[in-house]
Length: 116
Image 1 (tube, rainbow, N blue to C red):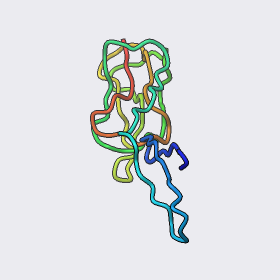
Image 2 (image 1 turned 135 degrees about the horizontal axis):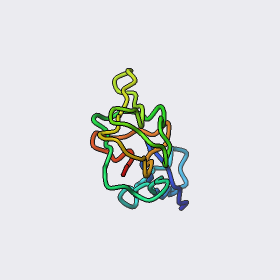
Image 3 (image 1 turned 180 degrees about the vertical axis):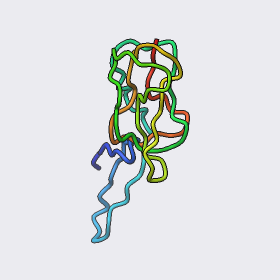
Image 4 (image 1 turned 180 degrees about the horizontal axis):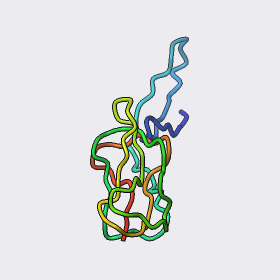
């Protein structure tokens, strides 16, 4: 048997493949529930959460941790249904952490960033 770690759409799975000695394809059997991906937070978490309004793909980090932003400034840009949609700061403040990566798929309600 061989153990592999496979990532599918950002979700990590540990799988074990058993060679049954036949000429067919060996089955792949998940051996554990998906592991939670390690957070990608940069800096300390802030008090104000910035969450995804819809599921999509992160196409741009518009404001890095430590950046001062005003209410309505884009912090992260998501691609939702083939349209780029900015996720904006809900108030004036400073971005405390970025909790996603460009290219990452996120679900609605996923924590994208925090600010103070």
